[in-house]
Amino acid sequence: MTVLIFENNLMWSPRLMKSVQGLGHKAVLFEQIPDEFPVADCAILNLAYGPDEEMKGLIARLRGRNVYVIGHAGHKEKEKLEVGKEMGCDRLATNSEITFKLEKLLNEV
Picture 1 (cartoon, rainbow, N blue to C red):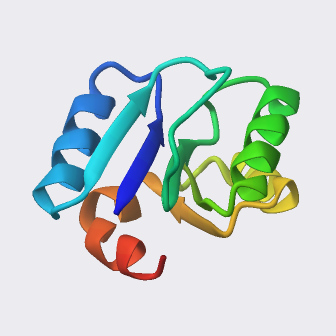
Picture 2 (cartoon, rainbow, N blue to C red; picture 1 turned 60 degrees about the vertical axis):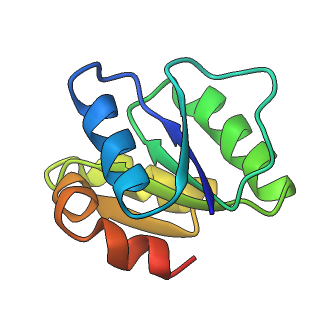
């Protein structure tokens, strides 16, 4: 499975990429919102990645290409998680779920 990772945290993104790859998937990292992205099955999106309007557009583009969108934020960032729900993420997760339950989340795709 190809997993697009939209993450601009330089400490977190390499770890997330390695975790996705370690589970046998292809990971493609974007540190900025791209004009184009490859065909993919899933996207993991940091809900603090960019301004809400840009995020909404990105999620719509992903969903328009039948990409399953997992939006994540810190467990205390309830506002971001709610915004992710409103924007149309297929699944919401806390950062700790991404860290400790990544395999389970990807199996839901």
